[in-house]
Image (tube, rainbow, N blue to C red; front, top):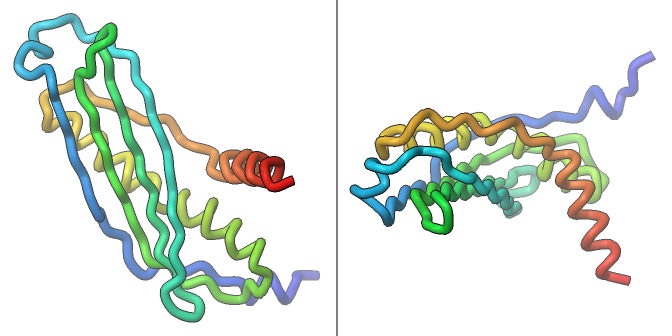
Amino acid sequence: MSDPAAASRQLLVQKVYLKDASLEIPLAPQVFTRQWQPQLDVQVQSSLQPLAADQHHVMLSLTVTAKLEQEVAFLAEVHQAGIFLVKGIADETERKRVLGTECLAVLFPFARESVAELVQRGGFPQLLLQPIDFAALYDEHQRKTGASAH
């Protein structure tokens, strides 16, 4: 038998857009004359904002820093956002989990493509960000914030 509550649960994407994007190349043009073996650091952040009754604004921020030794070769930052309609989830904890995992998973491919395009337009080799397990990140964040609240 199917669960009627699960059947009424809906996550609808209403809008996906690039809120902000930037690329800094502090070592240009010298960086292009050096051997390209960067150390990459990828930082991920998110924010949630309720808009209307079942409507939510979700933003995924990716910051990618490439260093050659101790010098920053480039810094790419993308804020990918979306408006989502979440219906049929009365439980606040479950709704936050959907917003903090499933919505971010929808936004990530757009953000990854934006970062890759910025980096490539900046004159660097193709950059492919690896998939992110947003459920694991969400669970880890919940453990950390739950532990610090006690």
